Amino acid sequence: MTNCIFCKIPQNENDSRIISKFKYCYVIKDEYPVSKGHLLIIPFHHTENWFTTSKEVHLEIIDILVHMKAKLDIEYKPQGYNIGMNCGEAAGQTVMHLHVHLIPRYAGDMENPKGGVRGVIPSKQKY
Ligand code: 5GP
Ligand code: ZN
Image (spheres, rainbow, N blue to C red):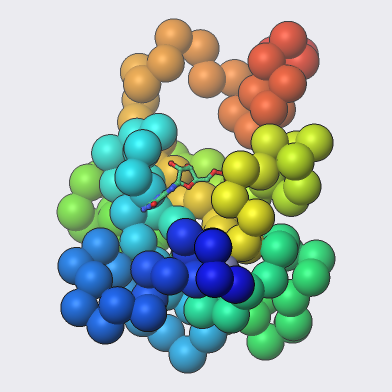
């Protein structure tokens, strides 16, 4: 896709934003991180979201999540993680190329974190 930012990033071999490359996916730091260490796992090929790609990509993403979590544990020592994807505009997706957010969480980084990813609808976060 010519106009897709996540297609373009890996086309520049020396792009220093890329932290790691795997068979199907690469990893970069989110440009507007929610927290210290916020990463994006992104397939090289253009595919809109989790539901439009293959099982091979799914399985690699799961492996990468485990691998990068171990690295983040060492580098930043977070106390928790949120893993998330926005699939579709209605769900808040802004870059229409699959990317999985790996977001380290730190005790006290917000007043009351209860509900975590339920915060996609802020009024429903706490239950
Ligand atoms: P989403 O589509 O998941 O709602 O949001 C896209 C995510 O990509 C956001 O967290 C945003 O900060 C990140 N992002 C947008 N453009 C760029 C970019 O050019 N480089 C990087 N590294 N991250 C980006
Ligand atoms: Zn793309």
